[in-house]
Length: 78
Image 1 (cartoon, rainbow, N blue to C red):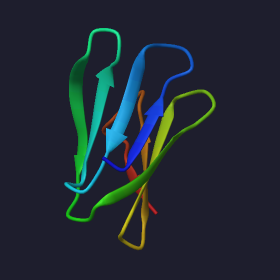
Image 2 (image 1 turned 60 degrees about the horizontal axis):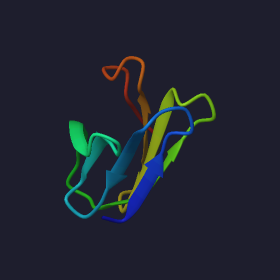
Image 3 (image 1 turned 180 degrees about the vertical axis):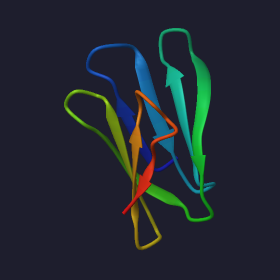
């Protein structure tokens, strides 16, 4: 795993790495609840917006991904 970001308002976290998947989990229950996105490039960095609505992923590709966590179907590649 290359990146880990934890929520400031709950016990959830996001992590990612070489396999191109982003995992969401809960560190209190120690369970992974879902996988967000699968790409062919290794992911390097994650960031949460201050309101924790958006998750940003940077990878080895020439784009970044922005995930709307309130509606995971509204993802954007920039």
